[in-house]
Length: 110
Image 1 (cartoon, rainbow, N blue to C red):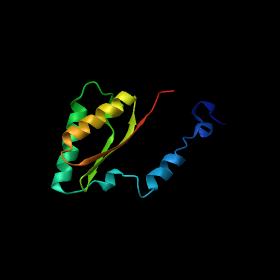
Image 2 (image 1 turned 30 degrees about the vertical axis):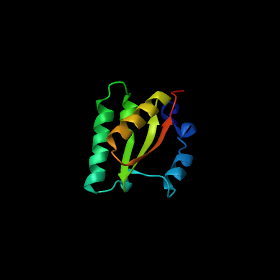
Image 3 (image 1 turned 90 degrees about the horizontal axis):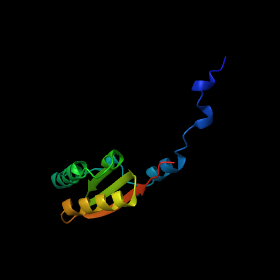
Image 4 (image 1 turned 135 degrees about the vertical axis):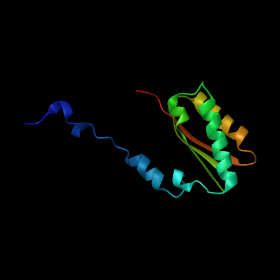
């Protein structure tokens, strides 16, 4: 007998587009984080600033911050354009001379 209450076959998540995007050579993932002391220092400073900002949602504090070869990449979902802007500003303030690429995505809860 089929248990309809726990049958999720009709509601499978489709992350195909996101997975294809993340496989592209341009998409940065946590595996791209540099081990250079300067890049690690930049990533840690930005992470501390983001987590310390009480105006940001939990979703926003969980973004990916990847620093490699003096370029900071911000990726992941945020709840609003204001959060995207705020995190971008925090990153720039703590990135020193590193370039910041803000690839954060505004996601609305539907």
